[in-house]
Image (spheres, rainbow, N blue to C red):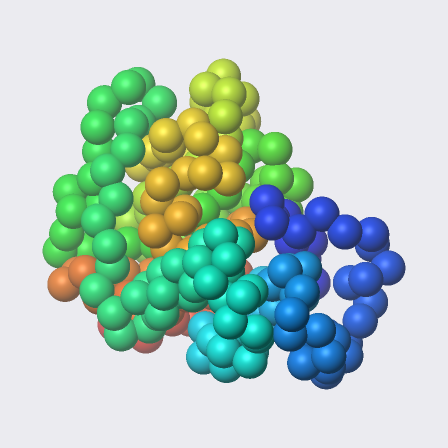
Length: 222
């Protein structure tokens, strides 16, 4: 499914997105001494970044870039991607509900949980919500829950979107937009994204949507 990618790191002309992955990799390899190459590596990853691939490209950069402030931040991002890949234990999340009460991912332990990273201002997130509502209606009585983690900044926009889109599952946010602590912890730099966690807290899938998500749940919940 084609989707737009909303990211706080990349602010570039639209035409650059027309570059192929191979062209982007070639661009990285030709410019190992430029800080801007970090953004190119990010674009290589796209919506579903492979931390092993990005790590390999990162290691090919000059030491001055890797040890720069931006390089250290990118290295931390790669570590977060690795630590939240399939098979890893899901890091804890505790943020506030729309009502201002703390709620944690661990409160849902014992169930399959889809951590859904989204925002009221994200068009692709809003377009995907009806499909997620259908998924929740089908599986919520079968040991399955959703935890929405919002990248919103305005509380009123967040609450209005939840109500408008009829998102009846649990929601949390720290209202820090792209600096959302849980998003940083999970290496999320574009939305919508999601992480599926099993009853023991182990990540079993990342970024599955629509029928792919439904089929995965049917497999796990049978």
